[in-house]
Image (cartoon, rainbow over all chains, first blue to last red; front, side, top):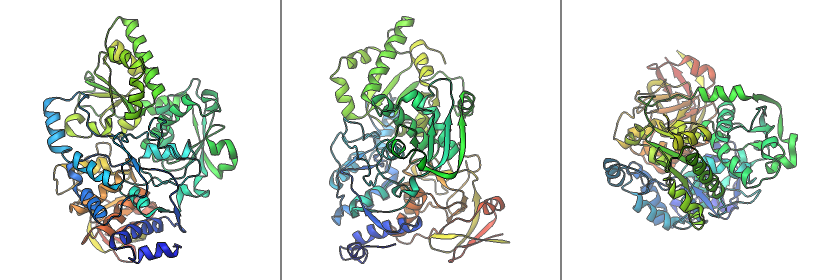
Length: 424
Length: 147
């Protein structure tokens, strides 16, 4: 790999042993993927995935200490994935005791480290950092060193930024060095589609279900998707961006998609259209039956498949402001239809702290509160990822949460019926 | 005995018994419980992986197509290495994915005394041939012997 004189000097140790290790990490990472050179990170902010102060990741804290002590801090401020704890989210005495005294006992310590390394602000904890109310929204063509699969796929696909699917810890290495290896989704060639997906459903497909189907089929490849302009239009308006947020998260978690192109809609597809598709691309047709097949094949890993749900999560990835408003209307309407005053299953809507603040300025916040729904900025995935919560029958319309935890997936309409009208 | 030639991602030599998954290894789901509760065998906790669920991964030659799942995956591999609960080696039939590469490279650069050779691009035939408990030897040129 070609290195500039400055990069080579860092690798040779001229800025100290720790910076040499940072550069060596990036060089080895690039060499594993045939990178030809390093390119500067050009986004204003970074986004890191490891937001949780789990006791078990003490090696991470030791590494962060090493960076801090050597003055090897991020050249960019960064946002983080959501916090794993929120006292507003239902948890019993035992869960609270274990969360605070055992599992996440290092949360405050770790956040202290993050502040020293370049944390953007106290509210910068969300997986949807690109939402307007958060402010970490890169421009088209900018090079990022982000992790968090749902944020990476959104930045690449909807915003047209350039970022590989980086891992936790590797994400901060790029913003400490100020450069990342040039390979994969950073290259024009790597952004070409090797799959053509034709959506031929009779109604607008559920974003999280369509994303799941495509993710499981194409895995880490780049799909070019036809047929969605019928449902989403050709403008990246708020509704389309919200749909693509949820769709992309499902492609990235049910598969390993880092970039998709949606015909006539996403920026590169709007500009280049078919020129983005590789010769010999495979074809995947999605109709109503295929979506049903995908949903029917999700394993139910509850001990008792007929258990009554004890908790419902909506908002993985975090909900947008408009989503919160729409869901408030839908929950109110669902309750009004049955005469119920509050949701029948404890339900948590999750969103970014900045979005939550904006939402709370509107009358929707009081209306939502009246329905009994809890609004939180927690990471539902981190809440669920432990043996105590793993045994709980939790339902969700997030395909990411379904994939990584024991939560059971239902479509948004099904979730709405369950929380407002009851039923197992 | 059969030999397969792969590409070295992180160098090293080792001999160990194989444990095989034909589906992608969800790193976080597989290792989280083991790391959290001090399981020295790193018993796989991913209920969605019938090939590996309940089997020890620490000290084994982990044979897999690729890793999948959360982008914390590399960090998890790094922690497993730091805590001495890593596989003896990781052998990929496919070209390595960015998360597994990150984890093994971070461990190689930032941890002292960790020997976890990683070899990729061993081919589909490798994964079709290898079975649990076969003896695997990884050589320093990326050759993998299976017997």
